[in-house]
Length: 398
Image (cartoon, rainbow, N blue to C red):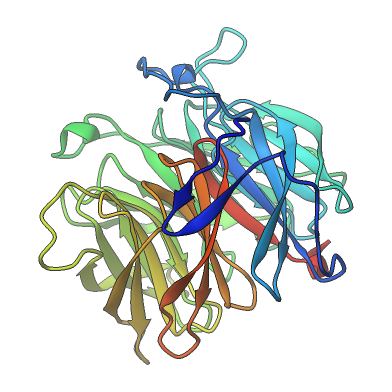
């Protein structure tokens, strides 16, 4: 990693791997893992790597939830393009997509399973399996902890990977492939951007960026199988480009973040037949913003009172208040502390937000106002090359 230092938004930037660990209270400190792009040339269409040193894979940090302080632990594991990560329900294992388009002579990406060393933050590779599709970009674990759901952006497909008790991954037990296209030039073919489960674990939803649909499947956790629901899809606005999905923690409401037109679609979920009904569509942008923008990540506050979305272009975190019916109203757009906030995360207490700014190679830490939900910058900015996804693992989950 580079030892170059710079200030973004008034905060000091700490290069990864150059500072010794300094925790005030390691018993309370969380682990934070950051996914990155290591090599953009591993995509199908040629892309140039950004200038400067390349990322080496997954990075680990300690996070003090009392002070909001990140302490770099360095490279947790070297692996290609680990752009999105999640944890096992036990907190002992980490799973990462490898967003690549070819592996051992085959057109496919891969998914890697790691064991977590809570003392050091280091990751030990357990095994790696093919994703049965190109450019895997998102994954989630079902409520039983026995299945990993993976979205393949490049090929427009999604798979279920069963998980052994020892954390290793088995070959896919189910594969679904989308077809079709959308009106935007980026929608010439299907592109599955996320694969999420409903809170009751009965249905899996594939966010289909390329065809402007949420594809709905009945999910059998025991068999790791997928069956088209009735109806099998939710049609969203043409050219919207659904990307990620978040559920309200207490209400039967889902929020689809749509990348291309920078909107959020709120949907009411009826768990009996597995039917989703649109109730609202709201922009993530201020009314006076005219520049190019793509939305990236969406999360609901643990209290269910606020919703957050990231804007790449405006370079902001959009803040929404959630009313008693689950509908949202925009409250503010707060600068993300860098450029191209691809991912961000909230800690379990709902006090802190960490934004991963891909094009300025930094993480920015914010403290959340518990009354308004608005993030305030703490002034801390930590350097990581091309960060994409960021997740917090609390000590009670180890």
